[in-house]
Amino acid sequence: MSGRLEGKVAIVTGSTMGIGAAIARRFVAEGARVVINSHRDDEHAAAMRAELGSENSMFELADVSDRTATRRLVDRTVELFGKVDILVNNAGMNVFSDPLQLTPEDWQRCMAVDLEGAWNMALAALPRMLERSAGSIVNIASVHGHKIIPGCFPYPVAKHALIGLTRSLAIEYAARGIRVNSISPGLIMTEQIKAWLASCPDPEAERQRQANLLPCRRIGEPEEVAYTALFLASDEARFINAADILIDGGRSQLYHE
Image (cartoon, rainbow, N blue to C red; front, side):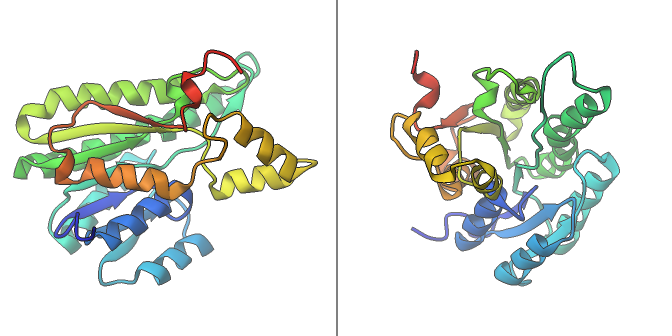
């Protein structure tokens, strides 16, 4: 199927690598005009610009923790494409620590990017969506927003809160044509996960160990998250609101190993 987002304009934050890049590619392939974003204009951003081209996409440098930058990002989108139909809040960062050893700076940065970043983008995009009484926001949460993994504090705190933000905004604006949903990926084979596996003493053994923890016995791919984001962003999901979809191969439903 193609053209599922024909005529739509989407912003995808944190979209030069991993899940965000997969979502941006899928949206363009389905007919959307897409604003890709990163807080760095690096080789990954350059590669995405070259891949997607300038006709149906643009790159906008913005740190989502900066409210002025997020307003500028949305304003630039409207200037170039005339509207905002879809917002995918994918930008995030991992902060894993012992709670009592966590620095105040790391706590603030985690919350500023993983939680407030989504709120900053929604705050900038919602008025534009409300003007047209239509819009879909998709927040990329995490399995960490459902289950606690020791040693990963405070990342799960931010992701639990992001799911709460999703549901609160969804109910607040449901009667005005806005849908807000979230996706909670489990282990996905992004560049970051590939780098982590490569750093292990036996990368292939660790990859297999991780795959064996999953009921489906394989690690997920970014494209599998992208297809779910596509569905939630499209009009096919027009009666889905305040929902969170787990994409973890069933891992979070296991009672024990």
